[in-house]
Length: 301
Image 1 (cartoon, rainbow, N blue to C red):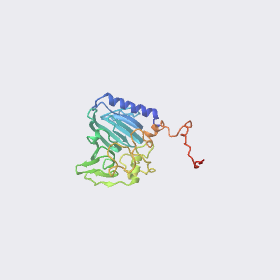
Image 2 (cartoon, rainbow, N blue to C red; image 1 turned 180 degrees about the vertical axis):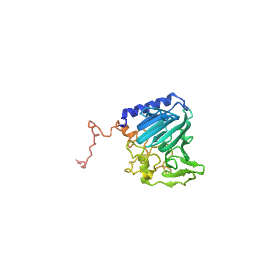
Image 3 (spheres, rainbow, N blue to C red; image 1 turned 90 degrees about the vertical axis):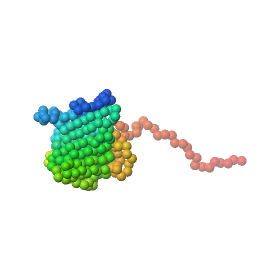
Image 4 (cartoon, one colour; image 1 turned 60 degrees about the vertical axis):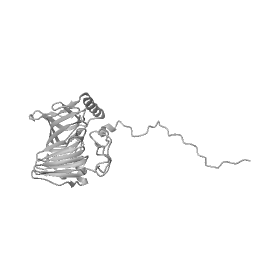
């Protein structure tokens, strides 16, 4: 299935913008967001997994739906509060709850990741309430930022990329991460302390969420260390969702100004970038150059 062209991306973005401005709130059962990218993926209503349909660009997404990706599958969803999720290969996720009140710019998002991986980018809701990702052995709360969560059912790994904080908890304890590039692992009987994630592992993690990126070898539950690392990502891969100034709490790379214009994203930015001219037109002429006197004036009597 080929990635969508630029007109499809623009259509999806306009459709979501219209939905946001025309309704004050999105409750469970009504539209929560729109699919802005999909490859080799299916969807079904929770409790009826046999009644599946293909996920296509522009699909409305509602709470209670189960989303699945194949070995080369990717789903990108933009929500009504401008947050987003990207579901990686060989993943199963259920959107449990979505609410958003446009007047107060607040609401709640909760989802269950049964297997595989998901990247969460916070929007308006996550500035007030944590975006919650549940796995079989942990609960991850993401406040105003970007995190990647992956699980194989028996173990969960959560990596904090940017924002205010990421909290990982289960029955044995809780750990909160505030430094970008740090990860926490969870099993049924423990939550590890935050550990710095090696750059090569971060590259592997982020690469699987791009169209044509490395799939999760071995199916759901493979960890980042089991995926062959792709080439190092280009600059401007992360995107800003916070108005905090740069510093220790910001990632070491520069941030793209908005979600739909990153030229390094194969799912979104690559298509959008084609509509922006990158060279000066041949019809343009250089500005005039002022004449500069190089000889002293001749003095006459």
